[in-house]
Amino acid sequence: MMNISTKLWKNPFFLSGFILLTSIIVLSFGYYLLNQDYVPKLGLVHDEEGNLINHPFSPIEYPPLGTDNFGRNILLLMLVGSKYTIGAAMIISIGRVMISVLFGLSIHFLLGRFKKILVSIVDAINYFPTTLLAFLLLNWMILEGPLYDPLHFPYGFMEKVLFYVFILILISVPSLSILIANETGYIMNKEFIVNAKTLGGGKRHLIFTHLKPFLVPQVVIIMLREFISVMLLISHLGVLGIFIGGAQQATDVFDRNVFVSLSHEWSGLLGNWWSFLWTTYPWIAFIPVFFFTLVMLGVKMMLMGLISVMNRTSSREITSKVHLHINKNESVGDFEFVNKKESSLF
Image (cartoon, rainbow, N blue to C red):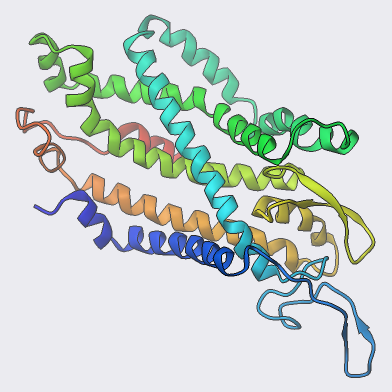
């Protein structure tokens, strides 16, 4: 019978989202191989009467997306920054889920008696806005330190990137760990696992033989959902002036000292251009918003396709190649906790 991976490539939602996301990444790396991420600045331009035309240029004056307040081609900026933005979101979402799986399993199998206490603590933490928490933790390292004491600030670009990634992983681990612990408990209460316990199955046997085939597909779904959450968080932090790897000050065509992202990643571009919403160049601020939305839409389509395939796959199709001795009347179900959390995100 057709396996799950084959079904995914035949699912129009998953395939469309995958092609969209892959195309952006491939184009970005292709430009890096060709031009080493060099983004040229457009020089002085005069109209037909010889009058000087100042930047930024609109998409009509300089297609397809115009220029920014430094005279740089916006399309090339978005192309260069896409691999850093999407790559950071991938690393953060994978890190969140992998660490949370370890903690979630530990909570269920080793700290079961303290689970109610941990749930109460995590529920209290969840009332604090994630964006504000991330801003407070990152503000000194990414913004205030380099701003107030740039000559003696001891951390460089890579240290700030690692700190940024670490904080964005850390703030989500508690809630995800409880989520996975709850789902583990739900799966472990299934009849065939209870029977395996009765027959003397140990924790290692239960995890790798019985729990793994049910939990792994759900973990993949959670990872895609977390990618969308991370992209939203990165964009919010960009508006607040927190960029991936920090920023440097530069003078634009309006003689303003502004912070510029070191890698042209999208949150830095969004933060740099956000003030244009209140000028005669509002279209500049909407360009990174559009690209953020485009990527999240692609991942959402992949998520919809994956959930659709999983929900149409019976327990026999998932487990027959792994362990034939499982009760064939047991159903995988519709991914209880994944679907509940999915509706809360959108």
